[in-house]
Image 1: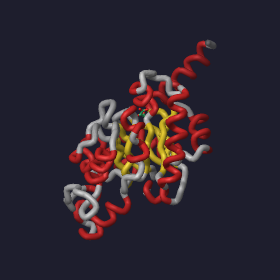
Image 2: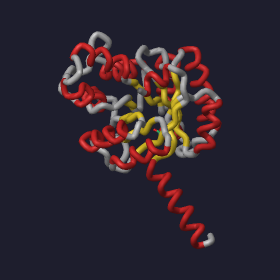
Image 3: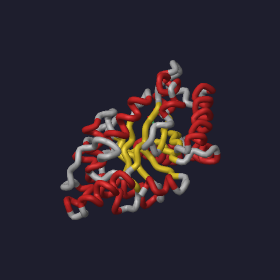
Image 4: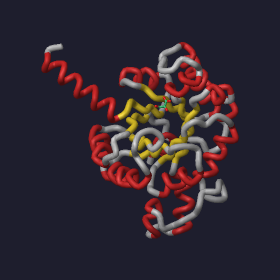
Length: 251
Ligand code: 3PY
């Protein structure tokens, strides 16, 4: 499970998935990624399609993470009910919002996630019921994305919220919020990342970051970033297509 690997201080690497097909998760698993983020915030994937993708991920030995559309309890519990190893919540800007995300992701007594033992995550009731609720709290990870100026200003407070497994910095949204859209290598973004890494070390929380290329992934891994999300299936496919076309046309 992703959470255990994070606790073991492993460095994990995985793409966003925007193409709405289970085969993408199988391909990502066979390629050796650690996780893939099924993105229901951007793109066309809905929960009923995400479940097929979660299934495929599990079969291919890759951890399915579901990025929800927003910090809404019903979306967070649904992502976990369908069997995601982790839920990733965008646009978290305050301690209260981070606490609400954790509360929605945890069953009582740690939170207020709606309790149902007939869902896929509970093997449709095949799991012992007490064990399911306990194990779900222990084994599923909560990843909060800080990606706006307000969240950045409150980072020191957000990072100490109990129950956060990864604090993820989204450079694209952050660059937009700072008035430099798309300039993800800008010194302001780099400064934010280095400050986050520092704070995370003190708080004992894993850091997540998004990169567009594998060389940057290695750089951030060396800086201590444990959860590195890498581009998206569509962009990787485009690059591979484009490269082949360029070779064929001798461009
Ligand atoms: C961001 O960079 O803002 C993300 O959410 C990851 O793509």
